[in-house]
Amino acid sequence: PAERLALKDRIRRLLKERNAVMVSHYYVHPDLQDLAEETGGLVSDSLEMARFGRDHAAQTLVVSGVRFMGETAKILSPEKRILMPDLDATCSLDLGCPSAEFNAFCDAHPDRTVVVYANTSAEVKARADWLVTSGCALDVVRALKDQGHKILWAPDKHLGSYIQRETGADMVFWNGACIVHDEFKAFELQALKAEHPEAKVLVHPESPADVVALADAVGSTSAILNAARTMDATTFIVATDNGMLHKLRTQNPHKLFIEAPTAGNSATCKSCAHCPWMAMNGLAGLAQVLELGTNEIHIDPALGLRARVPIDRMLAFTA
Ligand code: 13P
Ligand code: SF4
Image 1 (cartoon, helix red, strand yellow):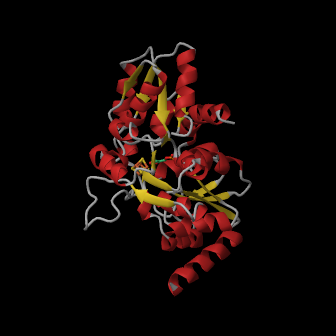
Image 2: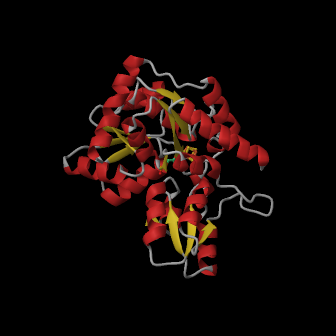
């Protein structure tokens, strides 16, 4: 604990000295969430992280999350210095959607509007007409459908099929999944619900369809937080990365939050639903990058300009 406190102090001092601001995702370690908030930064979902990074005056942003979040920040603010505690923190959706294959998929469907999830590389974004996060995907696809568009969706098949079920849009899908949310199990969730009949079920839409079907609220990490705050219940079962429990519990100290079951939930696995790449973010790495200015995100400027078009569309749509 003494070392942890010393690291936090060092980070607070370095943030001031470097005129830097912290932007953290809800899935990173509680220390990195709390530090962001107490130093004038932000902890939020991927949509609001992008907006905050773009709009903040600080010329150095330290993004705690996964690589696409740092890359989006750099694409939106090429003049700023974007640092991350660990540059190897990727995402299974990004890894599962290489740009050459994705371009071929788009070429095979020239009549479709390309809608791409934020959890992708800059190259994939550069091919998109629209970028979305789970915070706005439903509204964007609904609006496109109303305008007569047929959709090519990538890369998360579960989020895509959820949106198709909700909107009835004509969609073709890339076959990608989040390795964390893909593990939630409907049969076991039903059994847990039976044990807690009063509980409301909160589900991130990267989860499989049969899990989403058991939800009382479905949405982005911010939407889950909002549902927990506003729903008339005191017990919740939560099907998303368990990093989320920190904010859920601190904002709702009198409510009970229970982790939804995954395939790996057992006596030996207490913390299965946690993204291994989000877990790579830590205090020591953060202090080091602030001290040394290492782990900077670079994006080719011409690529960044192309990738920015669909991101700007998303931010304008949700403004
Ligand atoms: P949110 O946009 O809901 O924060 O989700 C990002 C993410 O990576 C979920 O796994
Ligand atoms: Fe990617 Fe899933 Fe990790 Fe989110 S939780 S960053 S979607 S692997």
